[in-house]
Amino acid sequence: MRDIKKEMEDKSWAFEILNKYPAVDSIQIVHPLGYDSEKSLFAEEDKAYFKFHCLNRECIDGGFDLAPVIDDMVQKRQDKDSTKVRCWGWQDKERINKFHCLIEQDYSIAINYK
Image 1: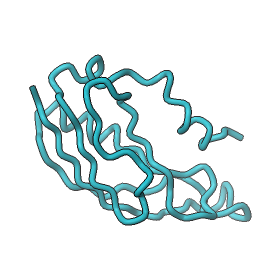
Image 2: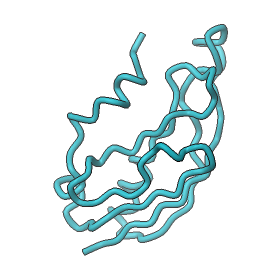
Image 3: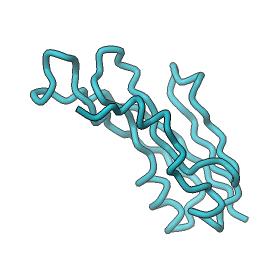
C-alpha cells in the first residue's frame, strides 16, 4: 500500500510556483477550520504543492488535492474561486477498498498575477 502521508511530506519533486506558473506572483488558500498548521500563502519560491491532509483521524490514505483547481484557474487567469473538494481516502481501516472517506471541505483560493 502507498504511504500517502509520506508522499505528502516529501515535496522535493514539486516545481516551484515561479517555474510551474510563471505569470503568478502568489497563491492564497483559505482553509476550513482545523488546518492551522497547513501553509496557506504560497509565494514564487514555494513549491507548487497543494495537497492537504484529511481532518478525519480514521481516514486512510486520504486528503484533498487543489492542484487541478489551481491549474484551471491559472489557465483561465482567474483570480478568485471557491470550491468544494472531496477526500480521496478510505473511511477507516475496516473499510479499505470498500467505502471512501467522502469528507468534503470548502476552500477559497485567491491568485495574484504579475
